[in-house]
Amino acid sequence: MTEEEETHRAELLTPLGAEGSGRRRYAAAMALNRSGRLSDAALEVYRICSPRDHDDPAALLAERGLSGDVPPPAPPRFATALSRLLDEADQYLSGFSGPGIAEVRAGLSQWRGGRPLRVPTPPNPVLEQWLPRALASLGETHPALAEAIRQAAPCLTWITYDLYPPEEIGAAFRSGHAFASIVGEEEAPYGAREFDLGLFLIAPDVLYRDHRHPAPELYAPLTGPHGWRFGAGEPLAVLPAHVPVWNEPMRPHMTKVGPEPFLCLYCWTRDVNAPAEVVPAKDWPALEELRLDDGTQDMAG
Ligand SMILES: [Fe+2]
Image 1: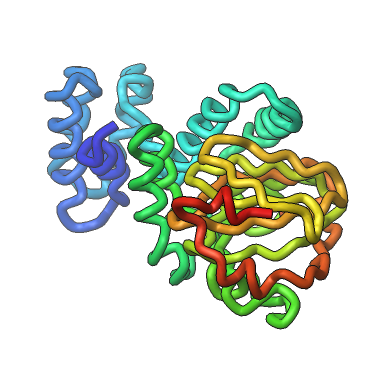
Image 2: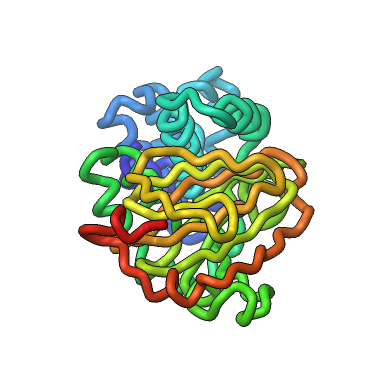
C-alpha cells in the first residue's frame, strides 16, 4: 500500500463535526475511487454527506448495504514493518538446518501471532553510527532482509546495556553495542514468555569478552568476518557472515568483531531471565588490540 493510499484511508475517518471534514472525507473517497479501492455507490454516499460536517457517512453506507465497499484504515506503518522483518528473518533462517534453527523458528511461529505493540524508541548512538554500514554490507547479498531491518529498526527499543561493571565487560563493548528485542518479554513489540529474538549490533573491532548463560542461544551473523571462541584460552576461529553459531546452555563464548560492524539475529530459546556471567581470561588485552584483517587466521590461536 502506498503512503498516499494510507493517508486517504485515514482521511475517510476524519472526525465528524470538524470544519470542512465532510469535504475532506469526500476528497479521500474520490482518490480511493479513482484507484479502484472504493465503489461508485459508496462514493455517492460521501458526496451526499460532503456539505454537512456532522453527517456520518457510515450510517448511510450501512443503510444502503455498502459498508463493505469502504477500505478499512491501514494497519499502522510500524506494524507492517515489524511483521515484514519477522517474515524476512524466518525466511533467512529457513535456509539453515543446523542446531537450534528449528527451535528458534518454532518459537517465532508460536509468538508472532498477535498484533505488535508500539514500544519506546529513544535514540541510540551505536545504532545511528553503525547500522547503515552493516546494512550496506548485508544488502549486497540479502537486499530484502537489509531493507526490512532498515524499515523496522526505528520501531524497536535499542538498548546499550550498561549494568555490567566496565572492568568486567570492557569499556569498548560497554559503550559499543546495542540490541533490540523483537519477540520477547520486555521492550519487545511482540510479547512472549521464555523466548527472546532480536537484533544485536556491535561496533567494528570490539571484543565481546568470554561469557556464558543458562539460556541456549543462536547467533545468526548477517555481516562478517568475526572471530569466535568457545572457552577462555581456546584459539580464535574466524567465521564469515551467514554461518550461524548455536551455544548450548552455559557454554562460554566470545566474539571478536572484525572490520565491519557485527550485526546478527540473536535468539534465546528459554531461561531468558537467568543472567549472563563473564568468564575471566588473561588474553583480553591482546584480543582487544587485535585487528581482524588479512592474515588473521595465522595470528589466531
Ligand atoms: Fe551469549
